[in-house]
Length: 133
Image (cartoon, rainbow, N blue to C red; front, top):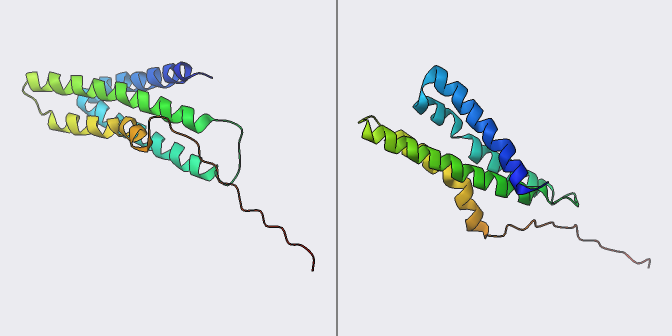
């Protein structure tokens, strides 16, 4: 499946959860409650990628999921910055929203720490053959 499909699958789910939570708890608490999701998804995909090094898979889904989580986190961080500017104009506390936006943007930033093109590194076990003596 394509990157756009995954982004359009994950992004509306986050916005729906944000809408429901902001109805009951307010905008700030809803954003803070959802700000941990992108970094958690990034770490889960990273762990699964490392586990795939022990078992080869022809699928390239970890690379696609890194990209999906990265772009989704960028859009969610932009929403957090907009909410922080809104809170600043209303003379409300905005520091927590800015910190949460930084947390949300980490998966997008980590994509470029490893390199723009994240490659799936698969390690194959060293095969040793013993010849009969």
